[in-house]
Amino acid sequence: MTTEPPAALTPARPAPLPAPRSAPAAEPPAGPRRGFLVKAFGVTAVLSAAGSALGLLRDLLLARYFGANQGTDAFLVAWTVPETAAPLLIEDAMSFLMVPAFALALVLREERPDGPDPVRQLVRATLPWLLLVLTALSLGAALGADRLVDLLAPGLADPGLAVTCTRITAFTVLPFGVAGYLAAALRAHHGFTAPAGIYVAYNLGILAVLLGCHAVWGVRSAALGVALGSLLMAGLLIGPFLRRLRTGRPAPRRPAAAGPGANGQALVLIPLALLPVAAFTLTRQAQVFIERFLGSALPPGTISHLNYAAKVSQLAMTAAILICTVTFPLVARALAAGDLTAARDRVEKDLGQAAAVVLLGTAFLLACAPPVVALLFQRGAFGPQDAAATAAVIRVYSFGLPAQALIGVMIRPYFSLRPVVRRAGDPRTDDGGRRLLDWYPAAAMVLGLVVTVTVGLLATPRFGALGLAAGNAAGITTTAVLLLRGLVLRGIALRLRLVLGGHARLLAAAAGAAVLGTPAAGLPADPLLSTLLGGVTVALAFAALGTGLGAREVRGPVLAAVRALYPPPVADEGKPPHGR
Image 1 (cartoon, rainbow, N blue to C red):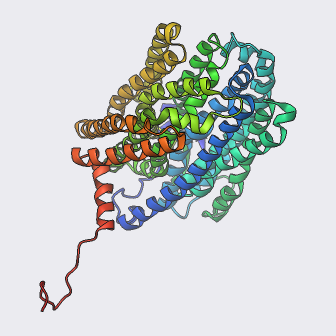
Image 2 (image 1 turned 180 degrees about the vertical axis):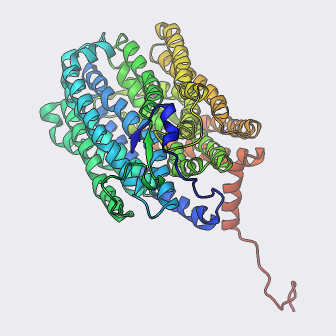
């Protein structure tokens, strides 16, 4: 493993030609791949749902114990540290970088089974430096907590409490980064169980401290729980990662003079590829910074209402993102092997499936937000006014959920086309145009942030938290539209007419389901019955409208369910069709 050499020196170490990309052995049969996808998605869905349920319980306890006041606002400002570190180090940037890197290492391992193990080379070249950087970032966030709080929320009523909680949550940067790295390695090896369970461990740690210590330490107990949960996340992955590393092909003995390019197996590290990924992730997270900054000047509790609304709204988006979490290693392997057609087909399918899931969730939230919030949060210190304010924000947030999910699908293959490592002697040129396109997602996100700030500044004085939520939805939708075009410019030739036509059908079905579900949810006075009746109405309406409109992501599952419930009769052989 080396860092990227100057262009003039690259030809000095040519790599042997790789194995033919179209060799039959390189492509697994369709049957096992479908079975693998179903199993992997099932495991990921179950464990992710468990993690989300525990996270929801965490938020319910926060609302019950502390309500929505200046104390919870202070904690949520401190929560910005792990909230920023999670997408940067676990969910987005680390995954975008390291899943393609490990996928390429695995492709090289298969092509030349007798050489040094590229997977171990990659770990030795990247993990030690990552640990040093993460330690420095964690210490820097803790030492600069007071300045960080002033920057994020200058109008906060209790900055001292926010600084204390920020110093505690700053510890999460190191274990979050380790967890993200190990999870990326395991997913590239098609190991999904342990990575899918990290948020179960994380939220169990938070709940344990919160339940045991909230009466003594107040909202600080939540910050301590976050620190403990981050340790449990990393600890859960260390064992599976080491087992994968040990069971991989051992590196053969070779002379000490052999360099990293021996047997043509070297992977060249491209450090500058980190920058556009990190820039995109941070600018995307900046939407939260803007909300906290503008919300700190609004009445106490506003930041808490925005937080609770975002947590509920994002459940629908999380369910949609599960699809591309499972399929991303397949896309990365296809791109590493140069099969752009297979990658395009997989991305188009992911876009349609993710849109179907998130639009169904969006329709449900638009129809049932008030009873859902009342059912989940309205108890203890969280009163009816807090519930009404949170439900209103959820409905506005929901308009941006489809864009959030689609960005999550598109950004993975986008950055996979220029991974953090490449083959030594890769003949593809790395011209200025390609490098400029690396920054396209960050530029699209900046334009989206401009829309977010503009709408927020114009709407907040009159509409308060609803104006902030509207700015969030408008900004992220702008970014999604730009990124859809950027993926085509990047080289994945999406059939936009096909993709957009399918999304239009799904959008029409979701709109009709929300219109039908809203009055149904308003019939019962009990929040549970209201949620159930509204949810069933939305689901049935979405299925019927989607099938009628010809949305394949809806029509296929609905027809399969009908065939399973009412299988066609099979006539016995040798008997006349109408009896004797």
